Amino acid sequence: MTERSREAVPPIELQNFLDTFLYTEESVLVDEILRLDADERKIEAILDTTRSLPFAASQRVSELHPAHVSAGELLMTTGSLGCLHAYFFHGCRWNQGWAGFGNRVHRADFKRIALVGPPVELLSSETRTRVGASRVVIRFSFEFRQGGQLVYVGDQSAMFVKGKVVG
Image 1 (tube, rainbow, N blue to C red):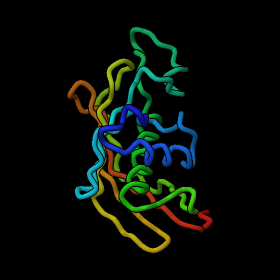
Image 2: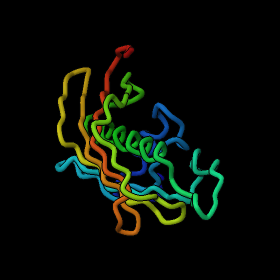
Image 3: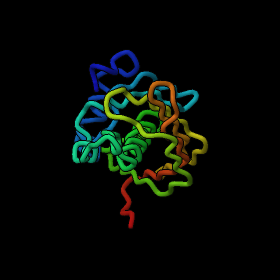
């Protein structure tokens, strides 16, 4: 992802995100960042559906059940995007004691199947943000498209905390 995102994010910063992130790089279901807009708090990115995806790789494919990106993988992609927001727009650094957790799916609409093959274009926007010294709560709007067609729309919240056990 670092090299593919070079036009949008300085490679050293993105590599630091990946090296210190709470999950291994294979779990970050974003393959290229096209745009980080700190003023608008938006990220445009790409999910390469030909990569190894945990559930898609396990599908029994047939004419009636085409190879597709599962709902779980799309939801995990929202988590990756949310963590990118926290890191790049709010300074939540994993190696400085920050951790992030999705805490509410207000709405998740799967509009059509995202097929394995064509890339999925990802757009995430912050719609509401509360920032404190050791907690950042962000509400997100997500729109995922494939071939110009809407495949997923989400309204979700996540909480990022520093030096606290969440349970």
